[in-house]
Image 1 (cartoon, one colour):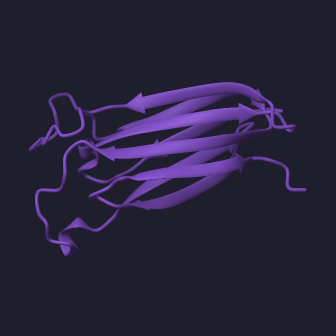
Image 2: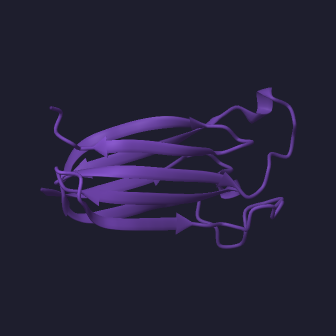
Length: 134
């Protein structure tokens, strides 16, 4: 069993238009839930229709969740727009990159980039991250 660390981040300039929630279920090899954690980074209520980032918003925003000892993680990551793009030009509203990193026992286990739709956001599901393959 090892400790896990999950990091979610993006260099997208308008990440302030999205609320992000990371849900981690830590499990033992037999599937028993050992721990359940969630971290939320809410910038504004859905439908806020912001024109600029809110005062005090940090461009270096990331969400980090650390666990106790376990064998694998099930992850849910919700990226929900609180403000839609300012244009309806499809070319100008291409998906943006969101990076999900997972460490197990201090070792890099996953470093994956997801493309997030600017209009709908996304719900990402990663199952059995770190589980031994049988």
